[in-house]
Image (cartoon, rainbow, N blue to C red; front, side):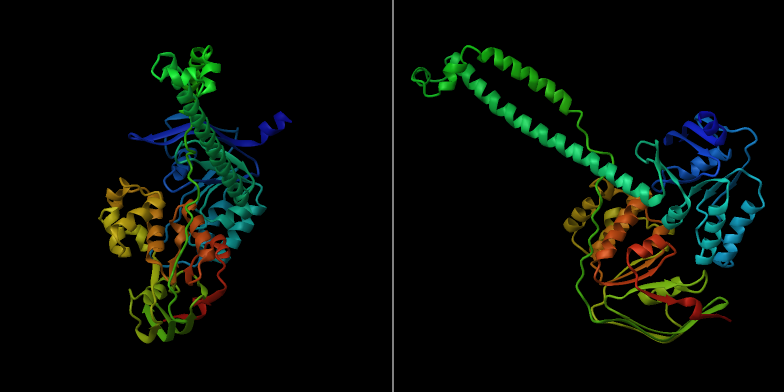
Length: 477
């Protein structure tokens, strides 16, 4: 059995590490890929997933560790596909991804974000091919529904330790196992803290008692109290006091040494994203004969009525104008004809894709206050809740990590208290931990949701219940 397993391994890496200048990206990465295995590689933005793929594909030198391919193994690396200026359909993008796979005789395919920009037809093409293939696949993807359908094992790169962990099962199974592990670590930590506090209280009480006895022995208490037996414990313990004090002191020192090892788990408990909002009018948006030209296409005419509490999924192929329509709703673009009527007391929280491409050159606290218009004391409290510390708020937005930037954006959304939230492909850029907590918050959100997203997992979890299809509301000119 051992030999059979050894024969089925097409690739293995052991204790891989990589630094860029002084920054350690990968420290200890170890796993194997066997024939017919489909493995997902996950971890927060910036944890080194793409770096690892390039090392495996021999495009980048590792610093330490061993990489080995079994005899005669061929591999094929497909980096992220970046779209040209002309917009391709999801099916066309899928063909660009699939053609090198179909035409290759490789045994292992290394894919970096293969589902980016695919529409549902393209996704189905890619999923069907990989599922039926008997080749091995190592895949980096933010598309959790894709990983759920495709993979049978997850390799996680821990951004804190730079180590790898292996989880059997698909993405949902990994998420459950990981959450259970974090909960268990926090329970163990809290149990230790509680036990330490109780022990310290007990030690303090007994130390005080023994000190009182020592005081009596040294004549520092009134002798008549002692002789009259006002505290019988003094008399009973008198002969053993010194010895017991010594034992207790030794125990206390030893316990302090042990309790100094109690450290908080490296992963925090969930962020608890909760959206509060003051309800506006029943009418949110009325779009009447709305039209907008964009290059060789035209949106509209659109007639659409959006009410408070609607949860609208805006769909359509690439280039049909989904982002353009959102920009018209928030007032960043004007229509060529037609009108957009807004409801009274409408307060919009908007996350655009551009937020990721053009970070403002301001300090975190300045950006937050300008965007949210809340007091600085409330701002600092809220940011602290999102694990953005008093030191972090002094940094420039351009210099904070992708994870910190994710939390800043969601903290802004919470602070605004919007009664209408508009999101343009949020899970393309937000850290996985943050997108999952955003999902939990949006699931309970009572206001209006208008979302553009290819992330099926995200769409299903936040319970979008209406669809507006721009494919049938836009035309070629």
